[in-house]
Image 1 (cartoon, rainbow over the protein chains, first blue to last red):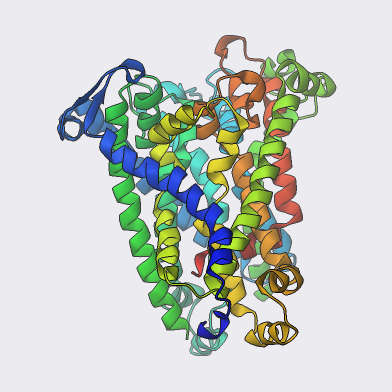
Image 2: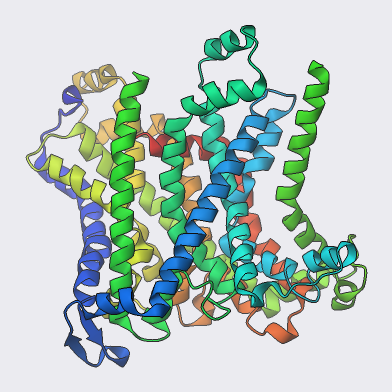
Length: 296
Length: 272
């Protein structure tokens, strides 16, 4: 790296770096800083009045049952979404890694939903789970004789949101797991096969432990993404209902900030989310450093 | 035994592929049906008779054509702008020596922890103050710089042999000529990878345009799709599904054409 740093024209360096500097400073650093400040204020409708309230917003956040429910909802959503996306992603990647004929086509057909716009996924699920005309209720009614009111039931509504989001996320996990599987040392697996290990034993005692760095990486990336990607699903499918049962943190930030005009509360929630993301990102950077040193 | 296992694997994969694709297959089928056909019992799993009509209504009456143009314009602007700006920043990071360079690196690195969505309230205030509320600038400018793009190029530059740099310098090339004549042609793959990731990202934007654009004629495609379902009771699902397919196609085409670069871009962006 040292040998590459040959140009010493500081003016040119500054000009080249300037767009990045100014945009990141103005549109990322400054709003982040401003969010922290805002979280200590109570802001009136349309920002007409601004009263310093100290940590009152945070106290409300942790004591008000409505906000406690939002944290609980978010926890349930993130854990189920990440768990299912990882598990199914691994399963599909292992299947697609068997070098059967046409695995490239299988791979493509397994990962394409990653490019799917969340709004499209939301709208399609809204139709599929529609109580009267939805295809899901047609099949359930036909075979089991029930027609649940999916989006009006707190548990079922959350289930639909998780399902839509898992559908969209699996592809990302399949891409990475497949890449990791194809880099596994073949000789270890061959040795195990000669020793008479069954498929399950090979997977559980060799493949899975060898994949653990990738699993950790995906666990963190999926978790960060889960906090944000759910917005369109909640907005399109349930608007946070019924009775607040699917209001997730990012949706609550939007609603407090732009519908209820509780800017201070929105900022306080943003700060909480920011702290979560910072912790996860630092963890990820640490781990990826270790990971690089393993592979050398 | 071996071949039996193979058949099971094929069946498992076919089943998974089918399950993953089924919502889209259903959406395509229903996007061609009239309300009568959609409400029929049992549902018809065949192409209906309203294909042209549904897509035409979604395209013109619900203005998806207009929104698609807006989204294309914004996606191209962000993709091209970000590629140039990230390229320049990475050039500085790898090939220049100046006193505050480590700070510049850390400055960019920290922004990995600041997704736009978190700061949405303050970002909106800022954009409104600048006078950009309701403008394309609000949808483009804040996204022109990113840690991902910069590190993608930086990673790539670090793998280019130093000898090429030495040779260029012996020929008397300065930083700009070196970047233009040597780095740029060698970066085609990275540019493609970044372009796909960015295009799909901008195309799928939802929360930010929802907040910042109030005037419908400037809206982006995903919010245009959202507007199609706001009148719940009278929803013509055939038309809505046509809208969903229209909103999906450009992102999907870009992904399918460049999926190798897409996967490679992911692989690159995570090995920082």
